Amino acid sequence: MITCKSEQEIAYMREAGRVVAKAHAELAKVIKVGMTTLELNRLAEDIIVKAGARPAFKGLYGFPYTICASVNEEVVHGFPSARKLENGDIISIDIGAEINGYFGDSAATYPVGEVSPEVSSLLKSTEESLYKGIAMAKAGNRLSDISHAVQVCAEGYGYSVVRDYVGHGIGKLPHEEPQVPNFGKPGRGIRLKAGMTLAIEPMINMGTYEVRTLSNNWTVVTLDAKLSAHFEHTIAITNDIPEILTRT
Amino acid sequence: MSENEVRIGQLVSSLQGRDSGLFYLVVQIENESRVRIADGEGRKAEKPKSKNIKHLKFYDIVAVNIFDKTQIGKRVTSEDVRKELKSLVCQLPL
Image (cartoon, rainbow over the protein chains, first blue to last red):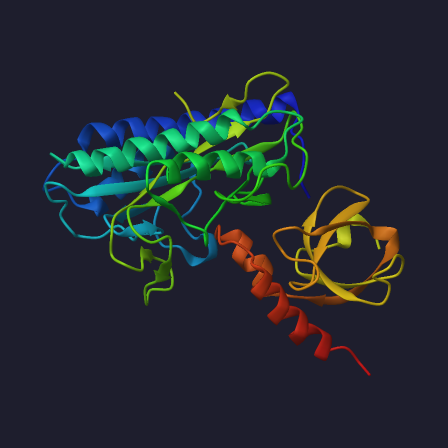
């Protein structure tokens, strides 16, 4: 059921969001050429556990790791590995944490070393599309107003929007109702209310929007092997501007 | 049927309205008294119909695949709903 969280519940989610944000901030400082994504996984887990929280993704439907680490054409659910990051790579890191029974979920795509202007543009545009979506997450708006804003922004830059994976409600569970697509016509779906908490997460591709899943049954890659970027925040809808909970 | 018993992916049939007798799957639980339903054809997953639970008959059959998709961030499509609905309706006793 789509629930509106109380002030206390949002306070708990703010705490979970801060843990996730701290993990991102620390990882951002150390991402460099030669680093492995397993090292990043270990670091994120240490940070989350030391904060008194629990890694939200580990064991979720059998997902084996604390973070999703998706490199280059990997869209989401990439497995951390002994793969060493190379100059020019991009890495999308998705982190979730639970504390006091409430969840936070946030993702960002980071450049490794020097990236081309084209790649830099993909990252900036994807992040911008996230904030355009968040701006529409206001009480009284419809759910698809968020979706439409993300799509218009990303496609305006010439990129494509992944359709197979979506944002979601979040709170006492890592994935709650409703699903929040990143595309669609405005003015549809449920009416947003203060207290609703959503994870908005555009996944934007340089080439086709189509994706496929690898044989590990988790990692999603672009069908044309072109790059993909991913940004996500957990937000609370208020009677004013939405509050981003996954911030330090 | 109370809200607590309603599940995403649950098979329902309409008791009231122009769609009386038609089968759907629950794709969203709005609140204690309303759900959103789709059949993937006349009523697409992207634009599900809002219905009062009093106007629905609930069956003890659930499309688990639909629920599982929502738990890994995968979009539930009209094709998913069509396939699952066809499979679940076949499980109903004659």
